[in-house]
Amino acid sequence: MGINTKAFTLIHTFVFLAFFHLSLVSCQKITTNCRGNGFTLDLIHRDSPLSPCYNLSNTPFERLQNAFRRSFSRASFFKKKLDALQSTIAPMLGEYFTKISIGTPPIDMLAIVDTGSDLTWTQCEPCVTCFRQLVPIFCPYNSSTYRIVGCNDKACQEIRPSTTTCKSNICNYEQTYEDQTYSIGGGRVSIVNQMNQEIKGKFSYCLIPLLDSSPTNSNATSHINFGDSADVSGLDVVSTPLIQKQQNSFYYLNLEGISVRNKTLEFKSSIVNSCDEGNIIIDSGTMLTYLPTDFYSVLEKTLVASINATRKDDPFGIFNVCYQSENGTIDAPKIAVHFTNADVELSAMNTFIEVEEGLICFTMVPDEETAILGNLAQMNFVIGYDLVASKVHFLPTDCTKY
Image 1: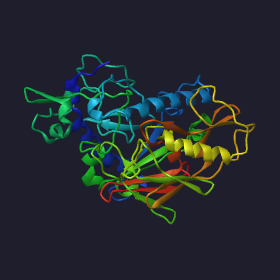
Image 2: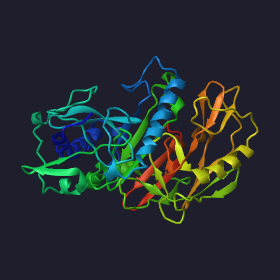
Image 3: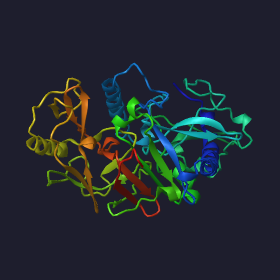
């Protein structure tokens, strides 16, 4: 379904005002989460009981299967150049939401949050073909801070020229996505860059494990921090360069290798040039971790040789490496991901998951074209982004207590 392009002309004004307003109000309402110019928001996983997408009738395993399908759809997004994406847009396909308010007077919204793109937008009246959403569609004409973005406005010029048109000095643009998802990220029009003076290019998040999103742990939630609240420090912090590339909507890291039980496998791939800096995307909106097929094959062989358990096929055909388990666990080997200057040791929770009762699967999968560090591998870490210093920090943490 399409969205009226005029609606897109509104969002850059709204987005800035929304988060600027939010950064002030947040520090008044949540004083314990404020440090200097920083603020913190809750992140709600779409399968959490706190989410409007939560389906009580689904079993935990059904929710996982749905999440796996979204992950593969999401990964296809990265296989296309952004200026060549052609598809329709559908609502509520993100993995994490946060509550914000936009306009004056403020109107509550539920926004998708992830690090895979740079535009932030909402449906606005009047739209010719609107998709259904859980909250009322925003009416810009009821907001005293609304204004139309002109063709010469900096915000209009910083959007990719191929997506913009100009009529009656109104900046119209349209952005559609291969996998029907949309999010915030690192481009010049991203929310992080629009808030740069307030947050100094810093944000971080701490994602709780999936099991802690269950009804028995309904009070546990993930968090995203901005500005001073996003500082990541401590003896266990490791840091790696954030690589700037021409495709600046994504956050790239440099993967040097992966080790299994202290045996290090040097990253090599005929698809992703291991000599080029920035060979893997870190993305909070993709669940699984994707590795180039040739490198994954070496990793899989090494992994299987290190595990003493009964192999079993995945009946859903998603995972290559699965094991039978009586108690929901296996004797998983220690796996570490080696980025430039940063060795990140993953726990079994980051790398194996029970996809159905008695079946444990390895959550790194092969892909012909892409390398993505997904959110399962990021859970129970504080992951801090410093866009000024061009660094990403990792701190192992129990995110349910963070």
